[in-house]
Length: 293
Image (cartoon, rainbow, N blue to C red; front, top):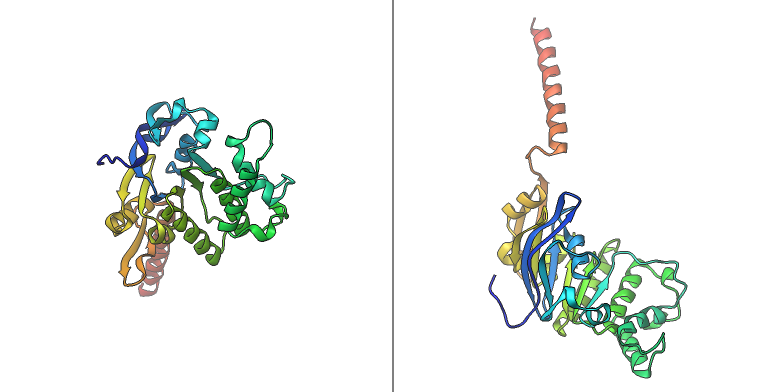
């Protein structure tokens, strides 16, 4: 891939192994500043593992990660937190603190002493809450919110962190269609303001609609990387997901993926159905032979 002077994430030859299994197998890619990138691929392809490597939860056995020109391995926790923020797919619901205090947690890299927020920290947190439309329930507890409201609150916390990069695992999981689109539009707006976003996603149609770029993983490898309209094809969907699909570019709508069926590629369901069809066919033939006899 071509190098760019505006690259904010550079991953080269990344390998992460669980016991003897390579969850990430030589990943190499670049993400430019301000891009909204969808990390897609089937279950077990390495999406969450990659996010954990980028957030220093996991240490890769091989390869390198550079964030904003810094070697990730050499960054301290507080230094890294000023570059990237993590929005998890799950968050402890037993934390008995308000939404305002939850968002203020994003200011921890900048605090001097123990939990002594300055006026500037409070102002940044309140601005983040306003941007994500969670100001009206600042006094409520996280566990009291709907799934969509929780997600907005957690993104507001990441924005309050003033990070240049957001690493998001499943931003629209468990949300209805309206909340899904609302979250994706908010993320799109943040990227337009210069925040770089890497989001692991399963919802392909939302990814191709909102993301500038897709990184497609399969079995721990990057199998495609680029603009959705350049890389999303029937062959890619079938090869990676085992699904036959129609890909259409609809005027004023954009790229749309219409799944038709699983591929007849020897998958478990195809084998089962094929065996049932063969058994039924043999029974039918036997009955016909009996009648004719």
